[in-house]
Picture 1 (spheres, rainbow, N blue to C red):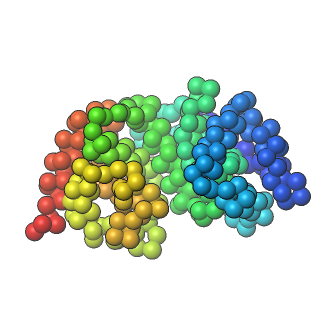
Picture 2: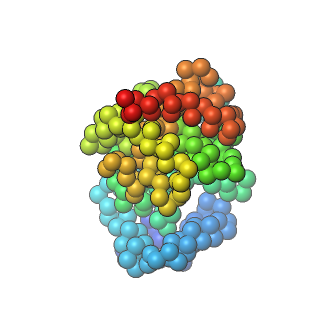
Length: 290
């Protein structure tokens, strides 16, 4: 069963005359689960150790929240998109989910992430990051929520996490799982061409570059690392395109669905996915060479 938790109104009470109060926030976040503030604080500390600062990178984002002009829109779209969501998932996939979708005020931990808290899966939507990234429009919020639920669905009814002995297989597995989440997102949206990343001609560019992008992803695999990969994340670029791996992943999964139902795909092992990708790359990536 899906639970909906809107903790944002209470989060707005952690400010003293417009100033963010960390001690008040620690008491507030315990409404999610007593003791879980450690998880958020540890994530923040890791960022601080990496060179970010509280004064320059965290506090300005947090203190914009109460007076942000899109704050009301964000909350309204969250309520709209989560109403009847469980019924929509059941109608399309025939299976439900055991998870809570939580809108909350975090410590810039992420716009959307999934964690197990006290044995319960939580889809955590950080309002402060959603506002900072300007992802509060209906289509952006839809993509954010539906995409994270796609990962939850694979974890619940298939296998989401697999460790492989080779980096090439691990990156193909990442491509696959992001593709599964993208297709889940598209199916709930009722549009196989829906991509929440599609702004300023993003989808058109991806379609035009598809054979070359696929060829280059496959060619990069033997030396691909988290530091040099150029396909996952809006902070990296492939030919001036961010998040190109999400487009490739969706195309890959749609290709697999021509012969294998979605609910069987989510249980494939890493070797099966890797072999299927090599075939996919040979079939479609070769167009770049011609």
